[in-house]
Length: 295
Image (cartoon, rainbow, N blue to C red; front, side, top):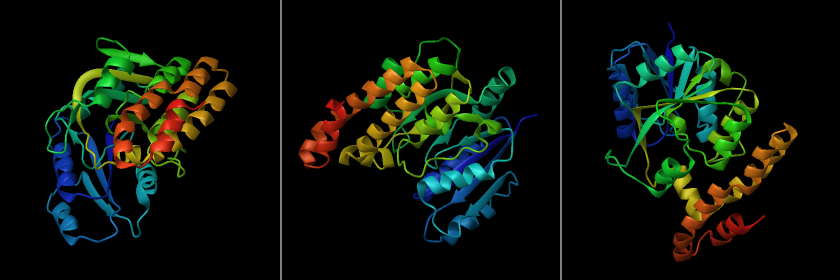
């Protein structure tokens, strides 16, 4: 029977990390293995002691001998995957007790699917359910309409994600063999998830989305994506990424996906929503305007 490798790259708040670990320990389905990879530059003996006191041999705590950075630690987690299924959970996100059971059930029904996206609720820094402009746009504008499950692949999937990335990356369960030989790009800071997804789509992997809510995704301003949105660097990166993806799609013969990538309308709209704050802060205005209205 398939086991879910839950990989947790850890940097930052130890209290949130412990809450995330506890959410894994509370899974209804016991067929999981948790690996926490600590990339904090300062050693905190209390963290290792806490893990030692859990007394669960399905949990392993590893500490990088040197700081690898965000992308480096994500790639380290990929290298450590050993089981048939894998998740890259954020160290501030939470699994609901049914998560492992839900994704394993989807895998049983669709064993050839490389990407499994279960239902997600969004929480704030305090853990309360919340609604944000970004998440409402995902739900209302970009997420395809379906009842229980949806299967997408090929250019149809590429167009769907390039029109607006409606997935929640930390909640995705991957068929580990699909990730083999892939790594997160070191030249990207906040759009690595979409870049990895597009590589998988081009390689022929299928996505299965299931509406069953089983994951709490934490949305707060301290995230890397939030800070880079307000200084504009996110959109400089995004513009170059979409231009590159458009070329890849065209070379693959997916001309509709190439057109959607060149337009990248959702990313332009997101830049516009950040423009008022950039104007008030007098920071990042030029890259936001260039991204929103440029070619």
